[in-house]
Length: 101
Image (cartoon, rainbow, N blue to C red):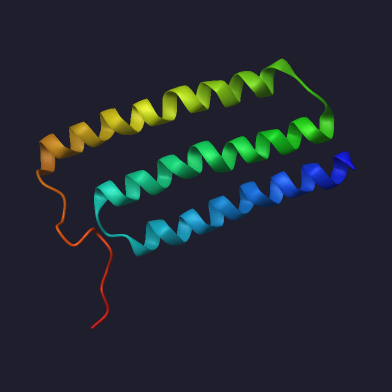
């Protein structure tokens, strides 16, 4: 049973990363790309670490990395978005999604 749980979490982390890579290709706005990359950094990595915890047993290092990621990645993305906003100005009005046609 722990192998099944570990596999599910590892596959979920890989799926988040794959979907986010498509999002990075699809969005052309810098702010939209920043949101996608920050979400995958927290959710994808946390799922992979939880899968590692389920497979190898509970360890303080994995829990510390998960807590560190959930505290620092959103703050870093916020600071980076403020710097981009000051350098480039207003984001695109259409939401950054490329429209066909």
